[in-house]
Length: 395
Image 1: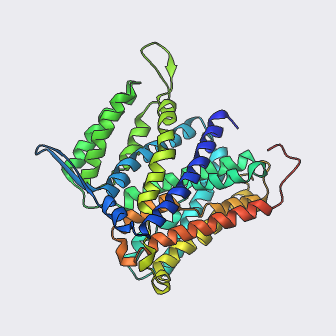
Image 2: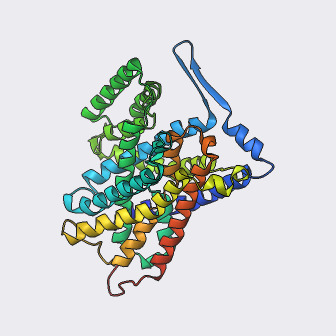
Image 3: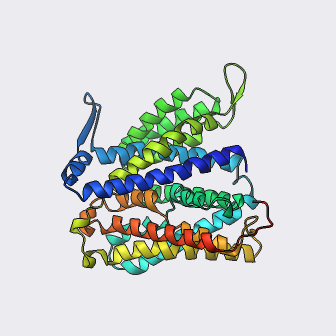
């Protein structure tokens, strides 16, 4: 396993621990005498205005969900681009198993959610909530297992999560957009053209991409398409390799990925978890929790993800489309399949798009994400902790 992948897994593992701490802290705050302050801070209106030209007025929680998460999606885009060209997704053989597994891990949870919520048009807006996997949490649990887990299995989970993220991006783009603004879309298209030209001429100064990317974010936000998609567009327009002014071969993609990964892993994602995971448990009763929406989310994450990932992986390997990860057993593959039910940050993000007002469900939708993710994490860890390991294989 190369050094870049080792660093990636180490950062994601540590970030997973910070996410747990941020979640617990948010739950404690919003269920204590400080609850009023926690809520009021998140609802603080922040306005950005430039004369009569631009006016963005949003509460703090949406600045984080729409703004800072665009940087998270920028990082995802950089990772996808690098892996598709040079990394573990650069050939059909490498792509096959994680891609097929990811497809199964999206289809089955969505079907389970649909079955429980059929006939309720509003609830069905959340069909994509249990389709996501939180790579930071999942790799964080794998790190607790040490050498019991082969490097190839870790890479499989990482690649699967990348395809999962790509699926989430497409879902957000096609299913979670509001009324479109024609003028804003034209301006966004002009920004994309500039980014394309910067890429075409192999411009290596990242400052230009940041400036045009910020304008693109504003226009995409105003267009009705979710603003975080601007991060993906910018990422795909940054050159993987180029010659700089000093006539040296550089990689703007790797350079930017290296610098923002730290901020995303240790600040942006924990902050996102803190502002979104603070469920008010005082207003939740058993009757409110056990509803079709929350049941569909919990079972979609815990059962749907593991069934979809493992079943599609089994079929791909059985019919020789792909091969079992090196130095891994079927039991370990199943354990990792269970871990993919840790939706957490991505599920919370999709939930915020699907249900703008969680009060309708008394926040049981968010609680269901936490419960489904928690059960998947515990069950996946226990399976991988006690399943037989191939001792004679160099992992």
